[in-house]
Image (tube, rainbow, N blue to C red; front, side, top):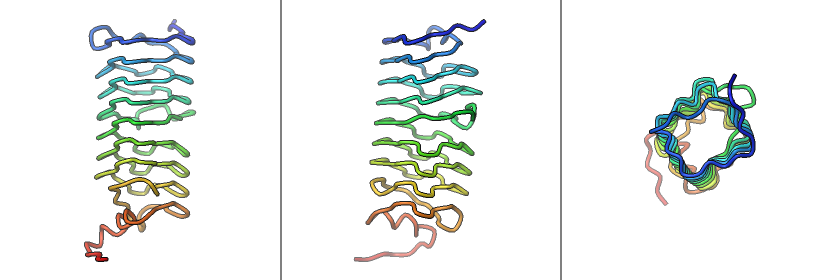
Length: 190
């Protein structure tokens, strides 16, 4: 039987040395932990917080994230598309989520705040109503993505083709809105 961890705080743990215990984590807080390349497969996280953690290359096969907050975390090359879809909900604040995949994820109303999402893959993803406040989306991929009512008004470096994505009621601002015209290879002058 898997362990249950409720309302526990984990400080400065190095899971590169010791394997991360399988189980269900409910209301747990992880501070300054190193999970790089850890295996989170089949683990359940509910109402948990990860603060200043390294989660780069964590394996997420059938991992459950329900109302999980990531703050000030390094999260390079993560395959969120391998997570359990049931109740998938998380938020990111001041995180580096570069080279990560959200392929086909249904993550409506997700909050991405002041985070780097460079070369992230949002192909076939549903991020309707999500917010990208202060995010860097350099070379992020948006193909067949539902971004309806998403807020990109304070995001930067995005390139989104309106012809192959659902963008109705999405918010954009000048001068970054030119990212909707990149495919046309045109020069825009003031």
